[in-house]
View 1 (cartoon, rainbow, N blue to C red):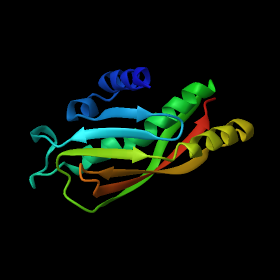
View 2: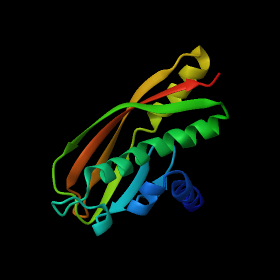
View 3: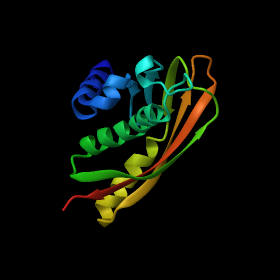
View 4: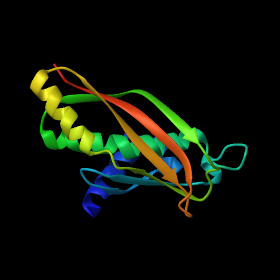
Length: 151
């Protein structure tokens, strides 16, 4: 998996430079789970000395979206993807290293199979949960992803 995480962190540098500069890094990816970390620093803080909500959102979205990208690539099909909507809940100040985990990769394969079989777009919701070093949940994000075959 180290090769995959390195590949995607390089992708992050070139395609999502603001996320890379804020410290968003992929730690683990497989077909069902992705783990992304980001560390609270001066560069990504808000006036309340915690991590800016948008930085948390970048890391949370990356944890979901990188699995979508990976499975689309593995399918060999030309499929577009887009976040249709998202929502978030913040439960504690985000300081230190925050780890976002998404375990909804199983939803992607089904959606890809349906969009290939029917030619119609599919929508599925993936959850990314951010925890601090003590394992306390600081934020939870839900992303509604849409995929469809490119024409």
